[in-house]
Length: 153
Image (cartoon, rainbow, N blue to C red; front, top):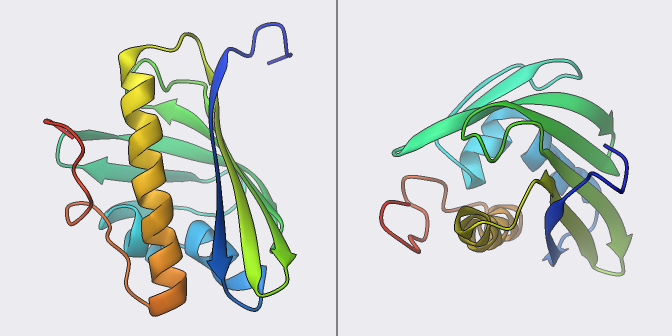
């Protein structure tokens, strides 16, 4: 989408204590890594052009892997799931800053800032903290053991 039709974005920044972006990159580009911080029920093909299926107790979505740049960048496009998510993109930019890998996260292209977008922003924040915990301690809090912010989550 060009900037005039892009819509609204969820954005977050988190620093993860690790000596290399590669540990974070692996956690967001492998099925095992994703299942360690986002949802236990993660399946699919994590290579460029592949589709990853993420399932949660209330439902789920499928994301096509559009870009992978080792240790630097990951981009997915939502191809199935809630109507508000279809054709949005999830973008991860990683960079090292001293002892921390800085994660610049965007879930972009929402058509309008509906209440569900606000909920998803909060949930993304909790999952980013789960990612941080996984990389720093070896244990994340993926669904269904995640932080619940509403019912249903």
